[in-house]
Image (cartoon, rainbow, N blue to C red; front, side, top):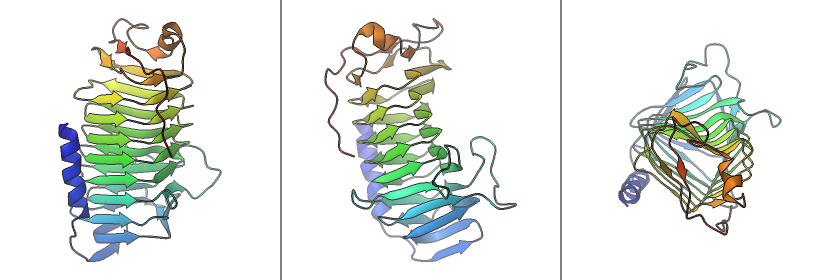
Length: 281
């Protein structure tokens, strides 16, 4: 598929070296920056366009409360609280043994304790073997190219949120979030993920197109497995996914779509997988 070709191209570009100059000036990152160990972020930290951030395996990125004058971007599409705003390129590649963790400084903090990672018009972002906890929207991508693989999203208001983005989400675990995945527009490939025990599994708010969502496990999401917003008036293709509900009637009761409001399109889910996809996290 075209998106796989595009993702490969920008992943290769991420691995291409650029300037070795690294400078941090107040809440702005410029040049090539390397993070490892424990990195504390307070306020809205911006990675400028043309710059590159590389995060080493095992790094803990800890978001503290912003100090006075540091929460510069609070209105939508940004969030209240400390954020990492990515306008350049980001490579966060952990390992199974040493994942990269993005979390609140408060281990008991609730979902929404920090803003999120806001990706703005970036030509290349990779997250692999990462953990995201306690954010408003852990990853929020706009007009960007993003790969998210082998990662865990837990206890966020929204795990993965995007629009107008070419995005590959593969082999991830989404659990105990308000909404696991939320998007409108864009060209996502969402496959081989486990989406379980969230309030909402998948929320498509507006005009999905050129997407592939298959071979995912939707398991016991509490309010809805899938919810459609008022901008979705066409049928939505979610065939070849696994659903924890046994009968069609039980499953359809966990869809918010044209079966509930005839203004909306309907979710097409047949044929459905009979057995869950076997994944390793």
